[in-house]
Length: 224
Image (cartoon, rainbow, N blue to C red):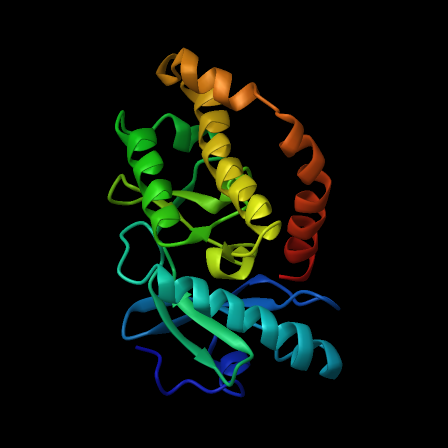
């Protein structure tokens, strides 16, 4: 799927723009081929130095995350990278859970399935790192949860050595706490006392690591 697309073709063949490019952020296009829609994150329109340094690095990192998550239901299918400067992935039909009308449609099993999905993602050595942003969690047309936008994600192999491993562990905890936060807001009766204690607990190690972790996450979000 989308195997023949070239960077030069995308601006002419797209059927929508989700986000225009800025000095440090890629343009996000919508493409369609044989009735299948895809999202394209394209750094090719950024400045020469940025796209060939930071842009290529971010494409490589996100492609690696998708490779680890290949075949996992609830994660968009990754189609391909184009010339090391653009990512083409499945467009998930559905709605962000941030809208009130979507919340009214959430199946009773939604949060349990979301928790299960996040745990499976972690088992594959990936932390999403930005689940607190409701637009990154989609209620699919099939009623199941989907997690999108892996720009800020990190792989365990990138943070395998101490003390970086402590930072990775905290990103894992942040993913889990993000799910609890969403449930506390929209389905508080489904959160157990133990989960509430886990959510509000802040140990000395976390207080020490948190500033470093937040700076790393903010940097990745600003440029991706």
